[in-house]
Length: 433
Image (cartoon, rainbow, N blue to C red):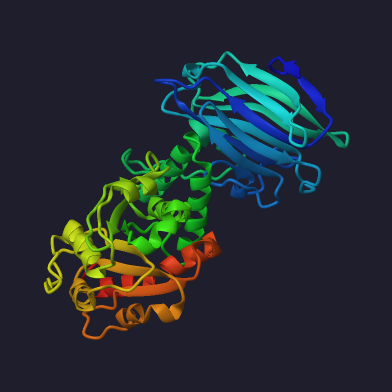
């Protein structure tokens, strides 16, 4: 590996590279996020899409992409063998969150050959002080090939100042210092993605981004809802729990909750003959969470939908009586509750389930049933979906023969496909703000 001093440059034998910024994390050390800016011959971006970072991870051309973060490292990939014709340079930069770069020890930028993993060049940054954004280096075109220059230029004005220098449009600060550049819900989602990347939850992060696509299609990109996962734990479900298929499903529901839920947690309700809330599932405990619930939840041998509905309604609304029909509140509670209800069998008490569906029509709750098996095995769920005498149609259901056969995109589409219609009707009836 060639080790460069500030200002030095070196030719590159390939444009297919990984650029990784590393540092030593620890208590009090600011978090660091790598970004890349694609510049034309005037050393300007062509538009806002020419900045690649954690919340805009891929350039439309495919020339640059964010490739994931670990504690103490963050990487972007460069594929410059067939770049846009007007691409003259890729600036490799970063911002510090929670303090200045002077508090980030052992900063180093390393370039490696993406095909072989062989080290190419490195640049140590040891003179940072009060800067909150840095240009560490750039890969630039020269005489038909590519070169790397160690830059080491800092900005006290943060990522906004750095981006503005290269022509990125940054929202101006309002005169009132309390006015945010982005709304609180958008900021929550950005912070959530940064946390998943920082903590190494790459699979969960990828799932949340797939969920985001499905939500955006239905106008739910920044919608907030509580998410409940109701899990059938009757004897017939044993093999699905033991094989890990329910755990995989739960992780996909969690990814939806991370986009929906303001506390980033799924409330888990195991049920069979009995039901109760069994704590939450979140990025801190999701690995193996379903196995824990399955091992410890004592819920009996058969399936009673009404018991599960009682537990959900009692937890969120204090209305566990299946015959209770509360009037819509003068000030609707916020947010609504989205219930993912998973079962592979019929209920032992149909009347109780019908009453819960009817009475919960006055509450801000949407029941999304997922039945595992063949459609003709779930005539009762079809009946609930068309149940008469409701204040509001608050149910949807779909069937799947095998959990493994349902892809992520299809699952997210089925989960939220009918929810927007309920949400609009609930707002019109005063159940949801």
